[in-house]
Image (cartoon, rainbow, N blue to C red; front, top):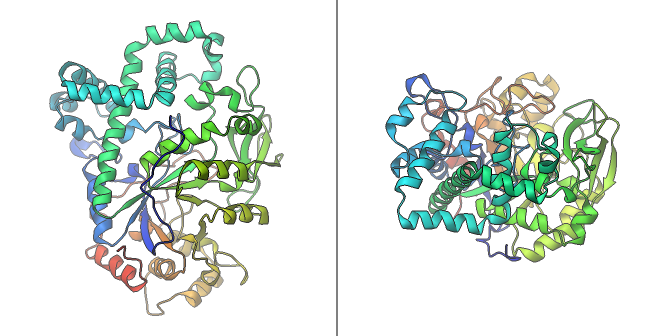
Length: 505
């Protein structure tokens, strides 16, 4: 992989912008024959981009795009490079003649529906793809081999072993002994090619969608978790980059101390980095990771940015995060290296939670925008950094995030005192139904970018949140339906953007 990359630079400070937060799986999905599927890169994604453009929105923010575990959390992915095959449009495959409509219609609609269709598509691709198509596939595999070789092997072995975590694989595979890996590559050749094909299709579809977005003046705003899942191709293939014992088990894990979301903190369970090892080789793992993310998106949010300054280290044996401690990280050196490698690196720092002056100094030293959440703004005093008068130009303002309840539900559960405070800060004192006063407050903010979750754009209440931090049930499944968009919504949003000078030029 090259050490430098030329970027279509997104200039955060060039003008005021606005956008919508919506993960692609939350797009409307297929509903034919009673099948109620999640969203993907198909027709709804293109229709959503057209809606953004009609509303004057120039940013589509989404969650991490990697393949997930069974809990569907995009923050615990099987790879920091790979795309989620669940986002592949099956219509796209049919249009290219790689998926027969009869097979699609005959496949039972259930948990393995997409897997079955993707296997059928690869078989048809092998049999019918012309030379340019075969060459494009080969070129993709070669240009992404630095991560694709390990990821495809990892997924093939994992499938062979019925989804078992790599830490419980036979020792020779777990420890990546050459003979065991070579035998696996030969034994699982077809499964490995299937995984590579799915990644080729994902990236092909994504780049087409990204180009369509750019044609409509819409930038893609991605999300990169600071930590990675233990059971992932990245940890298995580069165990020396993580604090693991000889059996691959983590001795300490990541999380956060008690905070707004949880009285016992959050024990995420991610393995922690061996920062000394990473720094010794010039942060090559991070450079490769960033390179892939910049292929996919125009702007990248660093989730849990404060972990670059210091991270919460929890003993792996601890049941909660309370027993953890702060440990310093080489964030200054890492970011310096990334900015040397990538010209005009377009990053946003998720600086929520326990933020010290050292974390703020690190963010400001690289002129990184932070985040301002209006749901956190009220009920404190005048020094609250989320209050509208305290916002900064170099920041992104949100009504709420994917980890918050919808703004309407949050408002309905708020105290009378908080409701009066919201009214006092509202820009338009005329009668407006929530969450529109909060949306207008975001648009009026001095923050250069304003992002509104789709649930708030649709004024949805209880039962429509994306995720509840600290829980593992009933998350990541929300999606909207086109009939939920009220008539004139795009025009209403565009007028707000025009009023507060957020229409992209």
